[in-house]
Length: 265
Image (tube, rainbow, N blue to C red; front, side):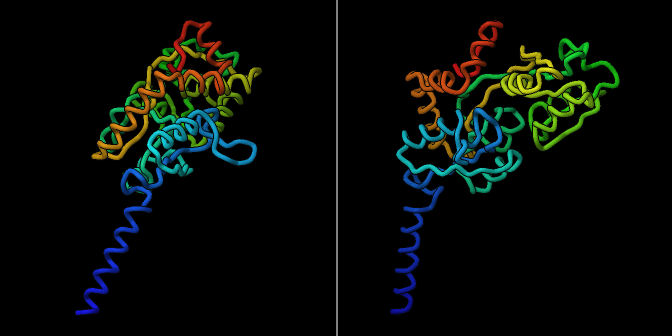
């Protein structure tokens, strides 16, 4: 009997300890947020190797409002949803588009950013819109598991798709004339064109409108409600406007001059 009581006490202590320290357990545990830190200026690293960018600042503000320690969990984009579903992370903040297909396996918060798919094409290409990519024999570079790949599969069935794990590889395909276009979000297209002005051109007006949201495991309605409340408060307090001015001032000015609504609003 004493051994049984001792065993029960050990189990009870272990459970209590887990409830206090388990990253995913309860509202006071560490908030583990997964993101791919290869997407400046949203999710990236500073010169010292620390997480930085718009998404990182949103994560920090969210954790502060929830009163929970923050842990950024870097991983490949393709691994974010599996990690969320397995419980390895609590949230995804990684410029992830809230698509109907992804909603089948995870939940999303209210949108925190509004963007769309745009086109990067060779500078001297005759392509002036996404409609030109429907002509026979076109080659499309896409980043694997992104909405650019999904959209091209559904809407450009005659095109040859070349999928890469890194968007920089897609850009090089276009810059070196091996692909007719790279389909990706407008801010990335803007930045990559600026990096390759002699070989590429950007068609920035979105041909598909998208929104980014925080990924949340299905059934975690309590956390979802808290995230939505944070987004509402952060927007009303001007948090998104400040991040836009801090990280995206040039892009904001360019889009506004073109009559295209800015992503953070």
